[in-house]
Length: 317
Image (cartoon, rainbow, N blue to C red; front, side):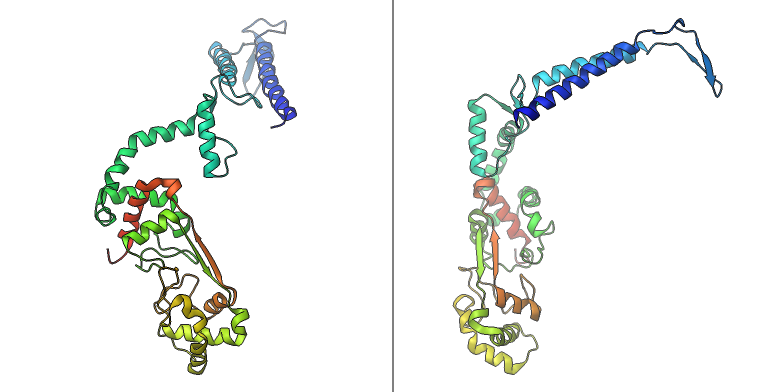
């Protein structure tokens, strides 16, 4: 915040408090010739106005609020760039990456700042860290069969994964369904753990230049035929000849390759839609999917518990 706006906030805040104190003091004085408790000489709707002062409990409460206000502004940040006498702040501000966050935590500790978010995180690690470690000693398969561990895994999922995969883990267009047992990068415990730890970058290159519009139409028909759909047989036969462009990743049989994250084209799962138009669009323009890595955000123990929860969602678990 610039010095001008900092000064503006300080003057406006303190000026308002002082003005209210003056107004309260002014209302405590009798500026008329009418004695306190006497009639002011007029009434309305049967109610007569008396020259009564503000109730004492009311004025005392006001003064206490003013005192607390100045006390609070002296201790905590709120007056422009003034950080407060006790160095308290809710969190490390202007952090845009994990690395910046770590540096901010170290700097706050070195400067003796009282950062509430950092304090709460340390407290949470002290309380819940041993619990995470306890379940992390188990295998991912064992975790997927332990109700207590699954409750923790579900909370981790809702906090970190539901934004993309949905609270029911059924995904949406471009975000995989985790409940159907179909995993492009492999559904074994070690595969799920690796996906969560290191993330995934899936790239389906655009094929329009290589195939042309006619080739896109033909390969689309062939891809549809791989999952048993009704297709134009002539177009599908022509598409089969051109499928070699796709076979490098998806395999000659179209069953995919978990090492590359190339999906199986012979099942009913379509990440970006399985309609004829959706498949043609995928071939024509390509797709780019990113699954962020969680090792630095959650740590190995939490990732392992989360892996067990994801494994438990599979119908085969």
